[in-house]
Length: 173
Image (cartoon, rainbow, N blue to C red; front, side, top):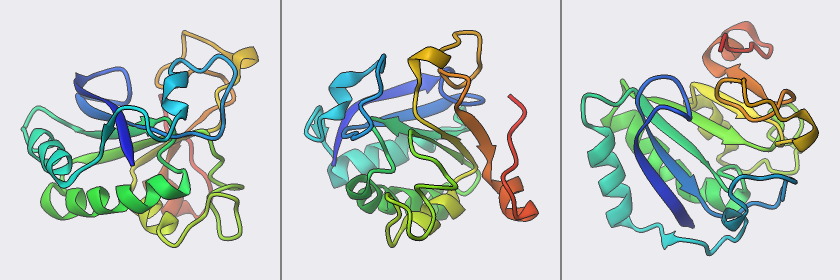
């Protein structure tokens, strides 16, 4: 896996102060994507154990509310296989930090058993995630007045409430 960019003290990609990690690789190729360079799975820096440790060290600072994983596409199967290690470490070493993931894939179509982006670690990733912003960016639905999403079709899903309710619960943002 490669990482295109890491943004420290980010307030644009989730609630509170966040550490945002833009992974590389995306097969969605949404028209109007704000970072088409991240479609390339080899864009940016190679994700290494040293990079992972620097992410953990940075996220451990008290001013961070949590981490946001976006891209590119963190839910591409090859990215899931790497990100699960980081997510496991965050849940173990920094359990008070929340996790947001942005994906162009649909929670209830693509990320379920039998879905086109479902892997052996998808459930664990989703069960460790607090907020999932799902849905492709659609240029025809673009709305710059929206918080934490780029187009009206995208959903901000509270996964903790979704798990408790047994149905998709949208977050109030």
